[in-house]
Image 1 (cartoon, rainbow, N blue to C red):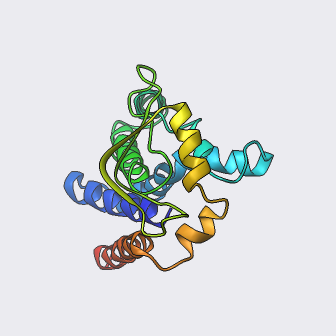
Image 2 (cartoon, rainbow, N blue to C red):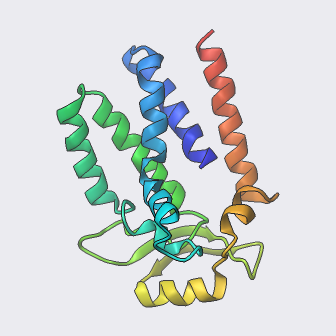
Length: 186
């Protein structure tokens, strides 16, 4: 979450600088776009649709091909010509972030493939240091098996509120984005 917000802020600053837009017109949409794919998690928690383990929270909006195409078109129709590009870049960054370290990756090729793809590192409650591999490919069966073996019912607390490499990186990117925002707006 903090990394997504930080990347949204940085992307808004870069768009503002490169395209000479007022940052005030980009910042709030950028933060919204950075968190929007995780709306499925909020819906699931509010309506208690899935168990707390979390791998299922990526089965509503975490389909990059469909999400990006539908979102791009909708935002293009509703707003000006730059917001869809901002949406596309920030959504891509969100999906890349979610493909590294957390859960069972993203279904990057859906609807052409139902496999989830994750890269480099995956968090494991069993092996607190995580699992390392260039590419992890998960089908529904392996996702369930992985979740049973490595899933964490307290993943929010253990990922966002404990001291480990991913939390440090997320926090640092967020802090850097706030510092950059401060100096950019001065």
